Image 1 (cartoon, rainbow, N blue to C red):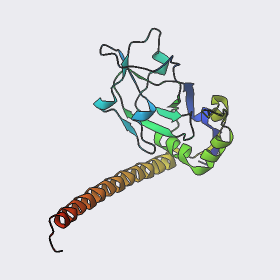
Image 2: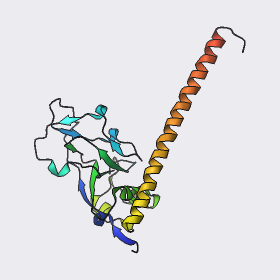
Image 3: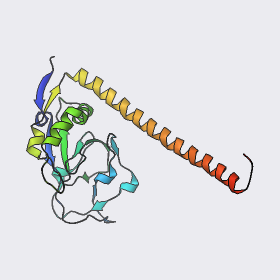
Image 4: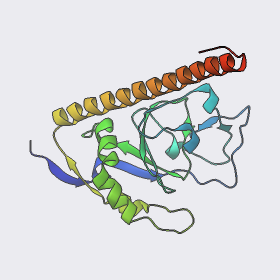
Length: 201
């Protein structure tokens, strides 16, 4: 099957998150978990952690904003915008209006769509359409119209596998970096203590 050029809206349903008034605070008896930007890491799928807990009891129906595994959140406000694949979240989990909620259609592999939205060519298109001086925002209509290539499912799955390997590689590099920093600090402390003690090196 030949690769088609389609729009984002042809690949996924795109909804805005729910609107909020003021800062959200954790409600111990809350019924809905909320995903915030601070819970996400650019370039990494999202897995819920207990430290991410932010429960609310909504005063209106938020069922259209409930996230499912395989959905994609796109950070649509701010200088840095990016997609995140939802891997796990408590039921029900919802997303606020700082995000677009993408539910991929049956003919689209979610990881492939994330990979597309991460590419520099797409980022350049999104940057060109941002509006607002204080907090730049990507218009949903423009976002939905962005053209992307859509190959056959086999090719999508191959690229999805590559994307997951790249994510794993980034995690390993990050772990190596942190271990290197810890080792350098330990070595520095040992050396500093010896100098303070007047020891000859």
